[in-house]
Amino acid sequence: MSSQVVVTGMGVTTAFGRGAGALLDGLAAGQSAFGQTARFDTRRCRVGVAAELPGDPKLPLELGAVVEQACAGAGLDATDRAGVNLFLALHADAGAGRDPAAGDILGGTPGEISAATGLPHPARIYTTACVAASTAIIDAATLLRSGRATRVVVAAGYLVDADSFWLFDAGRTLAADGQVRPFSAGRQGLLLGDGLAAVVLEDSEAARARGAAPLARLAGWGRAGDAYHVCQPVPDGGGLARAIERALARGGIGACDVDYLNANATGTTFADSSEAAAIRQALGEHAGLVPVSSTKSLHGHALEASALVEFVVTVLALHSGLLPVNAGFLGPDPACALDLVLDEARSRKARYALSLNAAFGGANTALLLEAA
Amino acid sequence: MSWPVGLVELATARWDGSEPPPVAGFVTSAFSPLAAAVAEACLTSYFGPAPAESTRGERTGIVLVSTTGDLATNVAVASAVQAGKRVPPLLFYQSNHNAVAGYIAARWGLAGPVVCTMPGGDAEAEQVTTLLIEDGDADAALVIAVNTYLDGAKEGTASLIGPATWTPRQEERQQQP
Image (tube, rainbow over all chains, first blue to last red; front, top):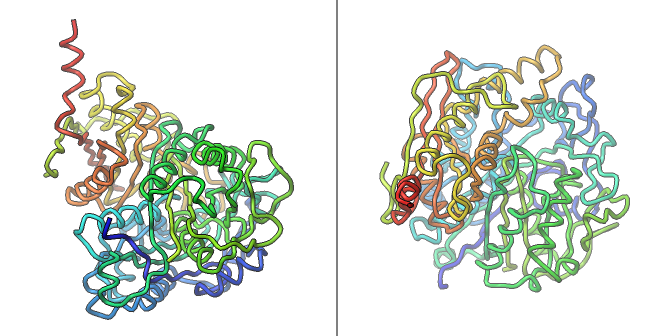
């Protein structure tokens, strides 16, 4: 395989702050960013907690900023930018339901991103729920490997809003104790969090030709469906296990080579146990030897943007040699027996890392990253 | 639509203008019932009654494209929040396009990847489907295009795109002694 897919730039914003440095500091400290939401009224909700940036951030501006971070980091000049493909992963705009006559469920965000960054209008918007961004990454990788493109910017953003917050509250999926506890006994559910990220994915030869240094290599990827339920994962994790197996096969490595796994785990009872079953099924006897954490316990669940935020988290883990903690842990759940990173971030030089995501409709993805 | 060499349209169905049958758990909006209805017609014409034959179903993904999105559900949620009323819990999952894809996948045993994108249109559907199959995690895809407008207008089609070597299952069944 001569041509590979590499990451040459990335930008990120979470409740920890703007930029990869702020996120890395938050991950290293291991203290979650959750607090009482000040953005809207939650008095009628069961839960009032989320991980939010201060103030009143605007999605187009924030997303434009992370795209700019990624492009600048990759060293893309105006000419380079004109030739990229832009794939976005977005949640429906909260304003669309209040101004339906405008007829734009995305609220004009794609056009504003394009105008703010000098990138072409997005090729498409991925709306595949919590695997929207990882699906965009996989499509970008497939496009790059086909030779039909040399560079794709993938960007995704979600800011906690009243409509989705009230929806998740109505679905009784939010953690009533105000903490996300992935894979833990006593876990009560998820909490939402602001998350915006962008990455520049590039053909390795094209990157080398212009002197761009890779941050990481996208070594493999896989996706599969559960064919099981409208919104619940199959209990044995079969679909996610197949996605992991395909990612490892594409990467040409075995389960024993995986040094870290950033899990999807949302802190939801049935979903976390399904994911643990998938990891055990796919990694076999090595499942108990791979350090696992879900950083949703720190920065919250960014819905359509979650997979891209966690992709950046995984690149940072490979770079820093610091595997982020699986926060909120109260005690072991026999259904989730894994080597969880507990108490504090773990130092470990890692070469290969998996980032898993799963969504409503039984959609599953696995991304395999290799340190540059 | 035009497809890369080796891929063909194995079956297709277009919304016939009648009210799509209700789907349990989906309320308020016609978006998901319409997607389910065109999927049902398309898959039935190829596979016969649900579920799909397992070896092919396991290798079939779902692509759902839309220009409008499910604006009616979006409006229903916004209205409840603005009025300070409890949001109907069923809207929690139906607000996401993946939900109806999951309904179709479970009913028909389609265990390939699920991809939902905007905007809709033939070119969009072609590109996303081609990438999905080219990537190799699916051999075929049920491609659904649905638009529902606030004035009640609707559009819906579903096509099963797969290898030219996949002969129609209905014909094979009829030829069996």
